[in-house]
Length: 105
Image 1 (cartoon, one colour):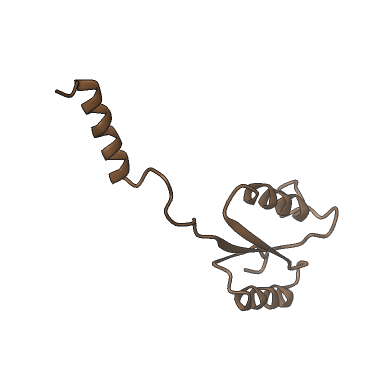
Image 2 (cartoon, helix red, strand yellow; image 1 turned 120 degrees about the vertical axis):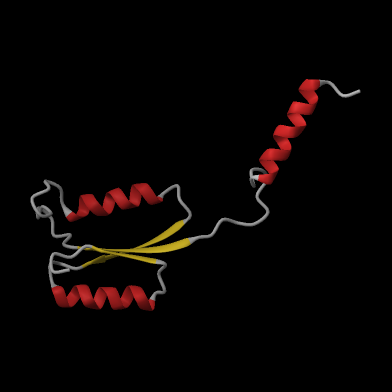
């Protein structure tokens, strides 16, 4: 006869497997994300927030390090026409997500 702790353990493992917890059978999806930054000119702060466009870019670089993502970066340079061109370039690169940070948006 099987003891109660063994039955509990088997039930727990069965529940984990039913929930999808366990060895991965397929690779995790890899996402392509583009950040079109408002302006990466050194010394220019973003909308009175106290940090620069380079600071914002660096925060995305750090956050993406451990995630299954490929990041693409664009500098809109505070120019609406360039922002549109960057958005078109991101679309042509077939990104899964475009983060458009533009003062004119």
